[in-house]
Length: 280
Image (cartoon, rainbow, N blue to C red; front, side, top):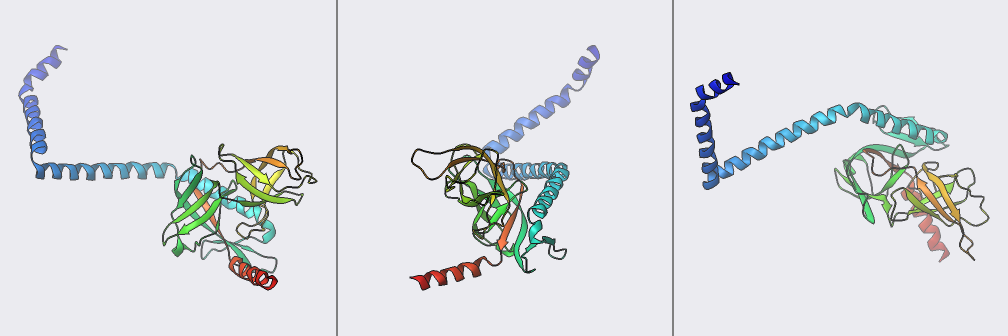
């Protein structure tokens, strides 16, 4: 303790110099506009650099986990679309699902989620890829867990996705192995609880049934996991079930997604519109 005190007394002049220099620097910065602007700019630059270094370090530490996540997404899509003769294009890095006639119908473009909301009535995601990457409006968006949403708007480099946690989102869904289909929509409270509508009362639906995409909308391929039936009941006098579904997708924990483009969707819609006009 005595030696520490001796050291402090021996260097007291140096410590006093540092104190006075600090006071002078504070006064100069505070009462001189130019020096204050220089200090603010420099401090912001240093702060931004340190934040970038920290972010890069965090991203590096997460690389293994994210790579594992991407591998799981790839494996999931390969399994889901096995009956569609899923193949991988080594040249473009885009997975393509083929129809029975070996004509490509769906392409899957990997994208990173850069913004996500889950606590509103109308929630959205923002992706780091857009028109120049081949993404178009009204494309489906899926993850390794299931469906995430539908592309709403697209710019050259980003896309805005209407989340499944949006009260206007409707997903064409069916009961796996039983064929009955209806519309899946979010209830608006719990992020994992959805309602399946339009299932008739003669359908043999029970708790534990798997709900998957029907493929009828042209936005999503069939057989993509949506969730599991949690509760089934019927209102008096109704001809349709009320079905509560627990979603397979945890929207609070997604980093990477696949954007699904149906190559033939526009052609099919135009043909359907032509038939409807003929019936008028």
